[in-house]
Structure formats: structure tokens, C-alpha cells
Length: 468
Ligand SMILES: C[S@@+](CC[C@H](N)C(=O)[O-])C[C@H]1O[C@@H](n2cnc3c(N)ncnc32)[C@H](O)[C@@H]1O
Image 1 (cartoon, rainbow, N blue to C red):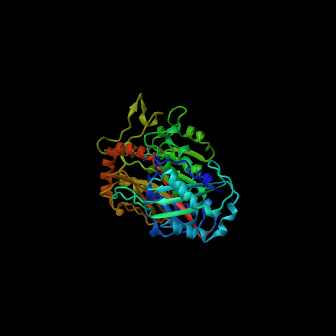
Image 2 (image 1 turned 60 degrees about the vertical axis):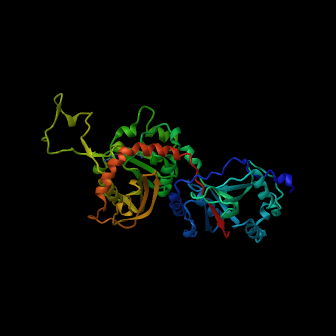
Image 3 (image 1 turned 180 degrees about the horizontal axis):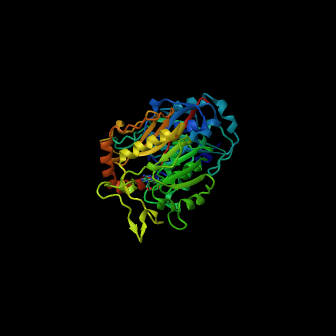
């Protein structure tokens, strides 16, 4: 391969284009990875100590390429997986490792190929990229260079870190990885379910990326039944059904479900071609639900109503003793017998919502089933003891999405034993949570606003395969 050929081996970035260094949802990546190992029955091992939130690379050991591909085929926060050929703090170290296993090279001798060079936490000029690519010339690949549809792609990934206290990137990368790209995650789904393209959305519809991550946390898969008791406009019904699960939901407010003519949960189901997977939506107050005692949900995925803006209410009278309980007549007909009757509601405190949700999950989930829900918090005041507990449920993960002073936490719990009648959820900091729900409702708009900003960010996490 002559030098001219190799100068075409870079992926087209110019000096000015930075490698994407935005990392969001960094607390969500490992829980998602762990969930994927469960869903796909893939064993992996990695050093938890090595995982850094501000680094998009993680070295994992997996038995085979097939399993690696399966592992990330529905990943939202994993961008790529590479077979690791060499790593080191210097290129000398990387090349020594690559050269130590020449038996890896022949299968790619005559394949069309492409090299990419990327620097996390820094930029690299095209001249630099070409120089780096040329340094791998000893691989001796004779196939065509194909920048669009190569049969095989190799990646040189430099990690300069993200140190906010440094004025700029360090002169040398902390680590360099070289490997063969094996497979990519499924981040395209974020565009498919983008709220901007969805026919029917409401004030509290959940962002596509997070809804998809939640479906992974819930271990959504074909044959499973997943329920959202605060379904609103049905975001989770769609993303869980996308991964093959049957879904159903309910809400105290039928207007959320019905939407307007041609724009409703039903029209969304049609838009995404999920008929037959999204089973039904029902209207009732979860505090007075009609379910018979039975274990039947494989997962409950929900964004509960915290604060008045999100519609936190339950059936009942605010001040039951203020007025006597006599039927109100409208046109001579008792109000509660009329078609347009809407029963009175009273506020539903955050601590009650949480304890009801956990009790419900403990009762109606199958053993091994998961509850995935959001909990809003004030960053400075949050303590892990704010998380409600239940004797039948154990915590799987608790990931913070930070908005500055405010945050919300994606909590994943698993039912690990049969529910015993009389055992109930324990919400230790009920008072604190109820106060928070009041403030949270006032700060709701701020959260919404910031939420739309992070959608632009990219998440990179490349798992690099070792010892194939
Ligand atoms: C935060 S929103 C859920 C939004 C939903 N995830 C979506 O994507 O549109 C909370 C929902 O809970 C509903 N809700 C409030 N109190 C309820 C109750 N007691 N039982 C059932 N649903 C309730 C509200 O009507 C609201 O639609």
C-alpha cells in the first residue's frame, strides 16, 4: 500500500471538527450494560474500578464475537464494540501488542476496509490522522479502501480524558486503543422515537432516549407483559413494545390517553406499527385499581405524577367532613349517575405515590420482575435513604440525571421474593419527599427546559473486546 492510498484512510474529519466529547447519562451506562447481559444471556467481565464516568471506553471480556454483537444490538448508550488488538499509553506499546498476534490479520487481507482515528477530549488534524494510520501499514491489507461501506473497519481511539481543571487537553493521550469494529449499538432508535416526530405528545411525554433506556432496564423482550400505571401519552408502551414486549397502561385521566381526533396513544401505536404489541390502555385511579390478585406483570415502567402539574391526584374529597355527603342533583338526576360525571379528586402526596407504587409492584410483579421509575430530588438534600424500600424488592440501580440544583433518579428494582400479605413499602423520608413534590412542581418548567438541551448530546461508550 503506498502513501497516497493511505492518506485516504481517515474518516473525513477536518482539523476544526472536534471528536464528540459530550457525555450524558454517564450514570446510566453500566446499569444498561448489566441489563443487556441479562436480556441477551451474555457473560462479560470487566474491572469495575477501571470504569470512569468521564471516559467513554471500557474494556470488557466476552467469549465470542457473536455474543458481543448480540450484547449491544439494542444498546442505547453503547455506541460501538471493538475487538481489541492493542492498547497502551504510547503508540509503541500499541504496535507491540498488535504485532504480537499476526494470526489475527489474514482474514482481512483482501477485504475492503476503512480506518478511523478519533480523540476523546481533544481534536486531531487530518495530517495527524494520516500519520497514525500510516503507522499501521505493517498490517499489509491489500483490499480496497472504502469509506462508505467497508467490509471491515478499524478504529484508533485516543483518550485524552475530560479534566475540567486543566486549561486544555494534555499533550499526550492517557490511553490509546486499537481494534476492529465488531458491531454498533442501536442509537438510531432515538431518532425513530424522537418526540419531535411523534404524532401525539403531551407536556410530560418522556424523551425518546430515556424511554428506550428504561425499556432496557425493564428487560423488555418478546413474550413479556409490561405495565405503566401512570401511562399519560404512553411513551413507555411504545419503547417496551419496540423490544418485543406486550404492553398496557392506565391513567386516571382518560384525556391523556385519548388525546384529540387522530392524535392519541392509538395513533402513535399505528405510527410505529406496534399494533398487537400495545395491548390496551384503561382509565382508572391506580389507588382503586380493578386487578385481581395474581402475579402477571414482568415489569412496571413508569414516570409517576409528582406534583400537581404532572397530575398527581387520587379519587376522594379534599375535606370530607366539611359538607355532608348528600347526592347532588343536576336536572333532577343525581350527578354521579350522569354520563359526564367526573368524580372528585384530592391531592396525591409524593410519599403516598411511592409507597403505593412499591406495594403494587411487590404484589403484581412476577418474581424476578422489575420496577423502573423516576424519582425527583434536590441534589444537596438527597440521600440514598430517600429511596423507598419494600421487603420483597431489591435495588438494582439508581442513576442520577442532574439538572444542577435539581435531579431526577432512574430507579430500577427487582422483586426477589414472594410478597407476604401485610408487608408494605417503607418511605423513610416521607415528609421530605412531600415538601419536595411541592417545590418540584414549581420547578417543573426549568427541568423541562433543560431536558430539551441534552437531547443534542452524544454518548460514547466503546466496549473493547479482549482475549477473543
Ligand atoms: C408524569 S405523567 C406520565 C407521563 C407519561 N410517562 C408520558 O409519557 O406521557 C403522570 C401521569 O399520571 C397520571 N395520574 C395521576 N394520578 C394518578 C392516579 N391516581 N392513578 C393513575 N394515574 C394517575 C396523570 O394523569 C399523568 O398522566
